[in-house]
Every structure is written in C-alpha cells, then in structure tokens.
Length: 96
Image 1 (cartoon, rainbow, N blue to C red):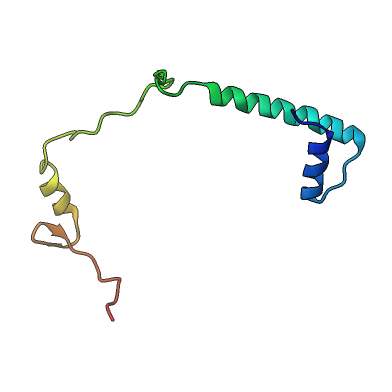
Image 2 (image 1 turned 90 degrees about the horizontal axis):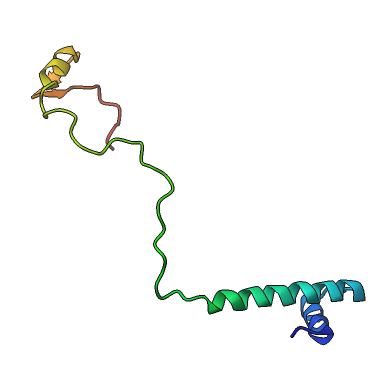
C-alpha cells in the first residue's frame, strides 16, 4: 500500500516538490503500477505458449540457381583483361 508518507519520502529523495493533489494522483498511479507488476510476477514462465509466425517468407530459399561454372567462360570473355580465369583490374590500394 502506497500512502502519503511514502509519496512524501519519494518526493524528498527525488528532490521535487509536489502538492497534495499531485500526491494523491501519484499514489493512485503508483498503486496501479505495483498491482500490474505483481500480476506479471505471478505469470508462469515455465511452459511458454508457442507463437505461430504471423508472416510468410516471400523470399526464395538459398540454393544454387544453376550449376557452377556454366557462365564463367562467357563472363571472362567480356572482361578487358584476365589472368588464370580471374578478371584483372588496376591496382587501387598502395601498400606502404
């Protein structure tokens, strides 16, 4: 039970000044908060209820769309320069 003395003590610890009207409203609010928290602590968490997913996955599954290497030769012929089946590019990072 939260009474006026508790509210005054909390106000003193918080270094705030509250009126009698605010004190009464705050006591009611805190009483409801404590009642709600006590309901939450009474809830059983030992056997959680399984939650059914609300959304359907619209993306494709991760798998190879085609056999590896089918398009490698065609792509390498379009590259300006190649070295051992790799695309050769200009050096852009200097090593110190």
